[in-house]
Image 1 (tube, rainbow, N blue to C red):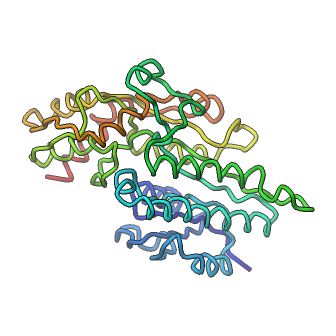
Image 2: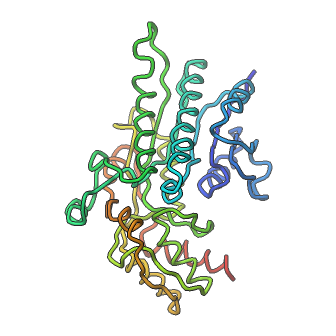
Image 3: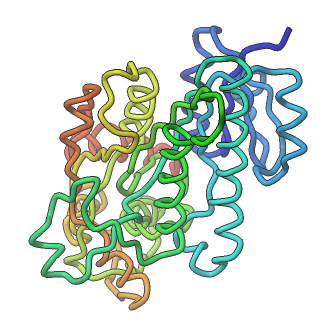
Length: 336
């Protein structure tokens, strides 16, 4: 008899590590984790960890002979800045890798007669506002506004949201028998700020890069203008929102894709928060025109009313608490 399991891809990242800690605590779940890299030593024994690629269909074929996949947290992706340098690779990883997993989830749903729950982190990169005047006017963007991404990463994420919706509602719609659909759920995250993971080159990483550089006593050249504004979220809130949506009853959901957010800051306001703790921070603003253009196309804020209404989303970390209780103490400890 196959064992029930939860599959987490991109498990070596901070969201993946936090999910492993959370889901393994009860001992209720068998966790299968997948990444190109090993997990940290402190997570050994919490999951069955596989070093592998989400493009490896043979790997997934072997997994389903031993495990019944109950839920999938698909975190693996090539992020925004790197995707611009390698758009073909980005499409392979972000789209084809997701398609492999959606097909696995669809097959598993039909075999067991019960939907596999498929959790997909998306991004503000799916939005593309045409100019700064529109960005200021439409400050809090709704899920259906301005879905015109200007980056390969944004295009990939938006298309995968649509693929997920298709597999949830219209898969094999011309088949003679009605298939059991998977249960796809997606969150559009703002810029995520972590105290425990060094920024990895995302286009929204100029904020956390300032903080990490200041804590190390290193100068930092910010690649956007002082007035550049996007929404942010502390990493603990990202984990909370992902788990809340995963646990929500299907009948309470009015859509498959939801905005979530915590607070919006300009780059200069972020710098002001950094200076409160690190008054000697050496930060200059030297905009890179290409990356600046991407940030300008992203919304200044997100309207997350539907997430609050449908499944009780409420951020725990506003600006003050994010910096004072989470970011500053932990980053200080990291570089002490």
